[in-house]
Image 1 (cartoon, rainbow, N blue to C red):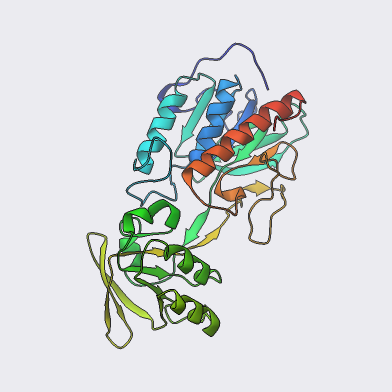
Image 2 (image 1 turned 30 degrees about the vertical axis):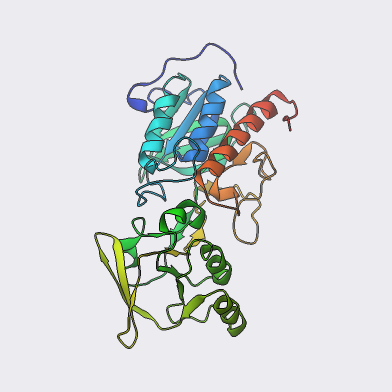
Length: 336
């Protein structure tokens, strides 16, 4: 990565002359790092790389997974700040670094390897069709995850207001209330035991699916957790605040809030001929510093972490990956 004189920063937070337009035949000067994703992992990495005088482009679709959440929690000094405000503050801070460019409302449509040792990666960037080409020495995948909610009627209207996916993030605000847990994944019983730390009144809704066996149900009953196996006909809410669930047979179960276990997936369809190793759950396999099995390709945040999906953890992973990218470019070992 370069350590020369910083370049002027394009206006309006977007990369301008730095991007080669399709069909022009010209290739713009490569970036030291291309960061795909502008969440806490990507922006934290951009900060570390910018402070190391690396030339960085962040491509962000501006469609964060936590967009429905009113407030984020667990981020030291920013507990309770809305997610969009946290992103705004981060981008504002990055404005102090002229070599960090952010291209908003765009996606990387394809990423491929090249034979150029100085720019081994080339990306096509745009909304739906390629608008520009970008070359880079290194790439950080900070794309996060896509989530699919169980098909429970009325659930989407409550999500992010009174029903959440992360107990560590939102359990404190819902403590000692009548809570629900919706899901259909094999770890539903484990999730229920975790949420029971915050309430003595928890009902697990399986929505008619056979996701808990008799042994698991008995273990949950021993700690006061109720398993409701009837299908949910409707979740009634007022301005996103859940009021009650209506189940098969017409029974009405009062609720004050809850959690849902989404199914998460990683969308890397834009990788053209690049196939980094993944684990059994589909997460990218990385070392402690965020290196994937592809030289020069790094990953940070939820895409590479099967652990807790918290903003502060993703930001830390981005910072660590940035350190590795700088040290690897210099051919020196990353400090422990």
